[in-house]
Picture 1 (tube, rainbow, N blue to C red):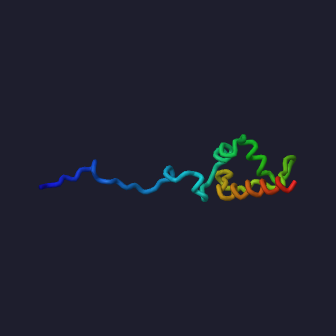
Picture 2: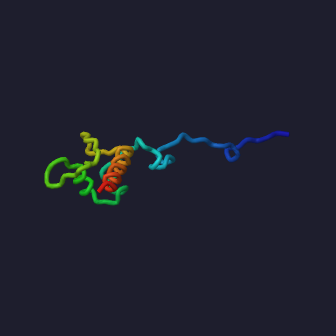
Picture 3: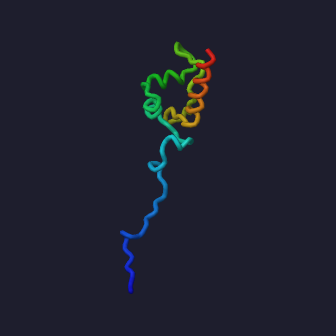
Length: 93
């Protein structure tokens, strides 16, 4: 008796890609202004304003930002910690 092995009955394995890892589990994920605005459900302008350290708009807890030559970027883990600090500050009022 001969057993034929075909591609159909062989199990394929794939290396994990960024699309296989849900964003919530990738804590080192880097977000753009557009990504962060969509995640927080705010406008891009609001994201820019929350990063201001001077001027008319100044926040008690500024948004943690990475200022890179290609533009502003945000670490998901930093944003999650920032959201927690904002929630704690709101409870203290």
